[in-house]
Image (cartoon, rainbow, N blue to C red; front, side):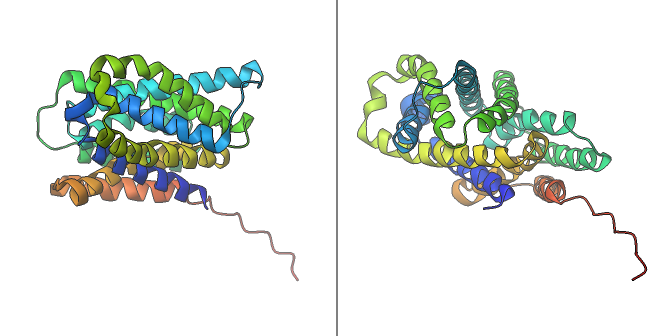
Length: 280
C-alpha cells in the first residue's frame, strides 16, 4: 500500500474513533476513554507482535518516549474534545504536525503547500463560536505531543522493523494513563457495554492508525508526513457531517478543499530534469 494511503487510512480511523468516543464521555469521562483506548490497544498489539524486553536500552528508551508522548497527547486531546467542538480541537492538534512540516521544509514549494494547509485550517476553525480557554490549552498540548511523536516515531520505526516497537510504546502509554482513568471512572471502566464500545474505538483510533502511521514513517520524511496529516481536520469535518450531523459553513468547506489540495501537492514528486540530448 502506498505510504500516502497508509496515512489517509490512519486519519480516517482516528476521526471515526473520535466520533464514537462521544458516546463514552458521559460514562467514563476523557481520562477513562484514554485508559480504555490505550489498554485495549496494548493488549491487541502485544498479542499480535509479542514484543520482548531484551532490546538494547536505546530502543527501549525511544519506545518509552513514544509511549509517553502518546499518553499525554491522548489525555490532552480528549480533554480538549470535552470542552471544544471536534473540528476546533482537531484543528489545534494539527499545529504540531504543521510545525514539523514547516521547519523541515527544503524547497519553496513545500512552504507553499504548508501555507495552503494552514489557510485551510484557519477556514475550518472559523465557526464564530467562542472557544473555551482551557480546551484550547489542552488541544495545544496535544498538538505539541503529536509533533514530538512524529519525530520519535520516525526513530522507533528505523530501529524496529515491525510492530514490536509500537506494541511496547502503546503498552507503556497505557500504564501511564491507567491511574488517571481509574481515578475518574473507577469500576465503570469494566462495564460490558462500555468495554465493547471502547474496543471498537481502540481498533479504529489506535491499533490500525498507529500501525499504518508507523509503516508510513518508515518511507516518508516527517515533513511530508506532517503535511499529509493536514487531512485530519477535513476528514473530521466530513465524519462529523456523516456520523454526527454536524454541518459546515461555506468557509469551512473551503478549508476542506484547501487542506486536500495541500496534501495532494505535498505528495507529488518533484519534476525530473530532462536528460540532455545525445544527438541520436
